Figure 1 (cartoon, rainbow, N blue to C red):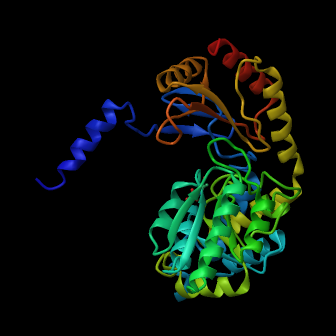
Figure 2 (figure 1 turned 60 degrees about the vertical axis):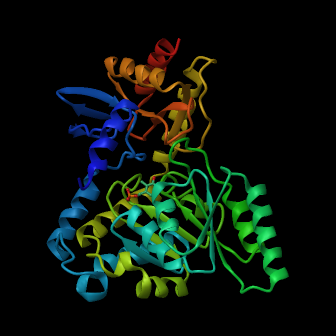
Length: 388
Ligand SMILES: *Cc1c(COP(=O)(O)O)cnc(C)c1O
């Protein structure tokens, strides 16, 4: 029968304890979440800066709806590119000090849209092993040769690129186009890529560096500029669905690549433009992000508090971001820990294979600017009890 694999795959998923189901959130702010009539302290939100539901962003959304409409009513190359989009793009360029910026309707679409446009027959894509699914899918959907270097192993990458360069010289093949791809802050462990070093390696090898700043934008840097606060990657993608607390995504790049994407990026060309009201709201969020350094300071402060309150035996991966991973090991134990925490009113996510290697299951704690000292102390107390 056609599509027999659907039943098979679902059963397999269940027997491997990997069956996924959605839970319906009745209400949420960055700090708390209400599910099935019960309110939990939420440590699995991506609202890192606590900006969701911010009055100024909501007001801008309403104003955007009134002025430009909720719907763009067309793709960007037809009549979907509104003043709200232009204004947001210009704002981002000034903020990040990049010549151009282009908006996509999601980070996933942006990664696919850019990588598909860049991947040609003689392209080489060099991805960090822990790169997000959308980066991998985008890279694999092209004719480019895809290679994945060990997580954050800049030496391996440098060697590979060097060898590649050497081989090409020997055989006098056409020069290849090399793109190094990484996340700025990695989504599962919250550790940072060595962006400055990667940038250097890229320059030495006549390659470009592409950084997915989904978890860095807003959180890292004096004004929340993410990886661009400490290095100058050629291309930066960031979603607005995390710290920015709206939705959609942008890609910041040079003039020439911008023009190329407008002409050749299929996800951009054949998709309805981002809601102009959302673009307007996103701009309002960026104004807050640049100004309100206290939100970034708060994340640092609360993160340090968590580290200081946890028992010494607990393995907390140190980071500069909102994301804090606690390695537990066995999958079943990790799930049991999550369940116990839930009973104590704490909601956080268990990260299990295939997302991480076997026996490397972990808790992913995200600390937001909306949490307070009491929340963190309670979390630490519960973790100390449960992981005893
Ligand atoms: C969330 C995420 C994306 C996707 O962004 P959306 O706007 O949610 O589609 C891409 N890359 C990384 C690293 C992410 O964490």
